[in-house]
Length: 385
Ligand code: LLP
Image (tube, rainbow, N blue to C red; front, side, top):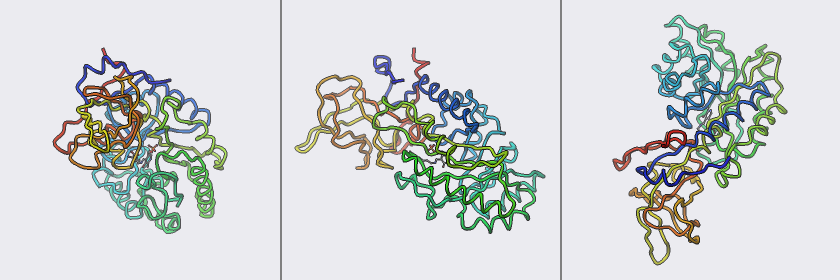
């Protein structure tokens, strides 16, 4: 399903803003949940990708749980109506108040990332007379083929417990009477389109399961995190991520023990394609070398190009004139406020509406107020009058 932008209606709105195609979000959720169901997999939406309350509430309607990395995300998920019994909580640096929030709400599972964290969870749970359910987040040392800033699964990264230290953890666990280990958790990175990376993860997980079996430990829950990528180059050809091939990799390559439950934490693949950033052209400026399209949106509104050299498809919604070559930049006083160099756009003029496609994930949630700019608003396809 291709997103159709209602240009006339959008032209009346104050730019820049986020626009969500709610039909596409629902279609994505229908596909995702029906395919996960075929394999019996459990889903926890990675709230960090987009915590807009309307988006959260649409996702909750499809029965997903929530994957959180902060107390704020736990609260946002609870406010949106996600049941605490389906909330998982990861993160290398959980503050005491965040752990207490999780304990007070009896969340499903803490994905614990270090021995000192396990000890603090144990202590705080004991103070409350509770037993915290915990999955060990293990670093499988799988280097995913993605941008280095969003590669989390290699052993030099801060994430998870090094797989070689698993035995140390297993030795201390029996002494932590307020922690119950219910599973193991992994997340190797984000925007991964090379499905063989997930296959490498499956192989590592099998080795880990064998090691655990030597200790007579059979974790009830296997959580493979998120990471499935989307097509930024051609969103109209692939509006919905290839969930089926993704799940099939795990189904083919992980040996599931009797009674084991499998979990995933997709973020980007759920919300990425349904969102767009819409901006207006302030000026078209020419110098002897280049033509610049200067927008009213800057990296404060969409940081991915500056932060990860991400390439969002950029289109002119107003013009159908012949194409020309432009650099597309924002108004922020930084050279990194450049969205794209030497790209083709229909001949562009002041006032034209420009769209950044595939901005639903890590777009609105990563906006900021640098230069004392206002945060962009959000509009939804089903609420535009
Ligand atoms: N689970 C954990 C533990 C994670 O750290 C993440 C993402 C996910 C799940 C969801 O991954 P996804 O399915 O969205 O790939 N801001 C960056 C992406 C950062 C991802 C951080 N962790 C970007 O704009 O590309």
